[in-house]
Amino acid sequence: MAIQLHPDVADALARGQGVVALESTLICHGLPRPHNASVAVELEEAVRAGRAVPATVAALDGQIKVGLSRADLARLVEAPDVAKCTTRDLPRVVAAGGLGATTVAATAFVAHRVGVRVMATGGLGGVHRAGESSLDVSADLEELARRPVVVVCSGVKSILDQRRTLERLETLGVPVIGWRCAELPGFYTAETGLMVPRIDDMEHLCRVVETQRSLDLPSALVVAQPPPPDHALPKRAVDQLVAAAASAAIDAGIHGPGQTPFMLRHMAERSQGATVRVNRALAAANAQLAGEIAAALAISESRRRESA
Image (cartoon, rainbow, N blue to C red; front, side, top):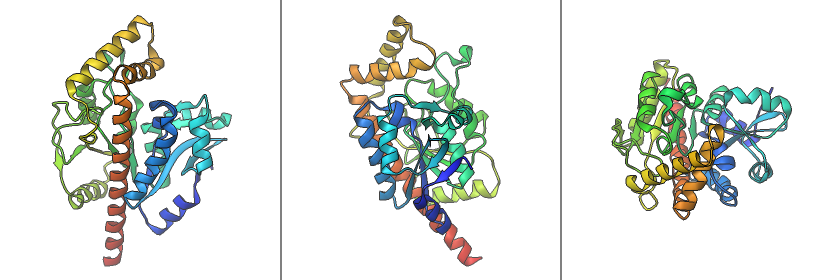
């Protein structure tokens, strides 16, 4: 089989413990070196702090691995050329025996395939600016419409069209819940002006997850929490950073797949590293919340089996 479970992950699933899948694009493409190496470890430790077992997902040596050893993690973050893999790319990269970092879409697919119910990321992909004419829309959205996993994030990435992305998620039947917030977070900022249903306690959230599952609905449930207040940037500052990065990309003739990493580097430089710091902070916070959700769902499932 092309999917290999780390022994700790396999044991946790067999015991009915909480497991959290972590996408690997963040540590390979979303953060610059040397931050990515330390963040890879921080995210797994954050999941453990939430009382769950971390399962970083990536393609290595002809297999999709769910849960990585420290050696695997080090190899992944240090490699100069790691393919960015959405679901369409997995067969090609795995068959070639290359290194691949999974996006939200690919991670959700793999997590659901092996029975992991919760995953964590930084921000969702979505509708790109001017996507209504370019049709440049992340595969994350379509995949979330057909993989019933809980996805913990800090909203939609700041460089995207967040309003249209939220509308697209609604069209696809993907519910978006604000964790202790009634406004969809905007990744680097807590502010977007886009309202979402709010949930404040874990028991309520677990009931929503279990009810969605009992109805056999096919989609993911997105749980969005704002970046930590001591790191979040004002919306106006983020809008200015995005506008400047988009303009610089046009001037440099950067478009297509190269546009996003170019804009992220530009924003990091222009903000003197502030965007990198908030990205690190929100990713760790999301990993811990995902761990707490996975642990709570595991306890709920155990109690239900005992009472049956």
